[in-house]
Image (cartoon, rainbow, N blue to C red):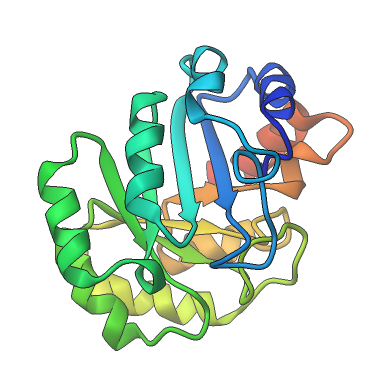
Length: 209
């Protein structure tokens, strides 16, 4: 989810209690135009720790100062952090991963080259590829280019876990899985459905056959 408030996170935590994982997208209005809580309105990550502690919490740091945000969310119980290569230098990323106690993933914008992205791979615990070209909003069309990116990553690091985030739904999840991804972040295909638990189960069934 892209949170509009701490209260909305608490509501979604209850709504999605059937899930083991909770993926939180943070946008600060600098790296991408949209702003989410805790940037607008202003808040503190620690405010939602209690309600999110029951999940494996993954925080996608689509922000201009990801290291500072990461430190705040680690204190708030984050188990997994996603950095974007456009917001952090290779040296900073390597240094952060060396001192970080949680799982750290690396992602990239649709216009970033695979040559740049490949430099970060040796220091990442896992990879997150975007299934949409323009990050920071839900409900966008699927970007077929992600399938080739999965293939490239598999050649570079055959055993790395690959997540796809964006436009993961019942029409795309099987082709994403067939390409080699093993984690799937479903936003509107779950949270905006009348019965989120049933929608979640339907997606799982499509890739667990």
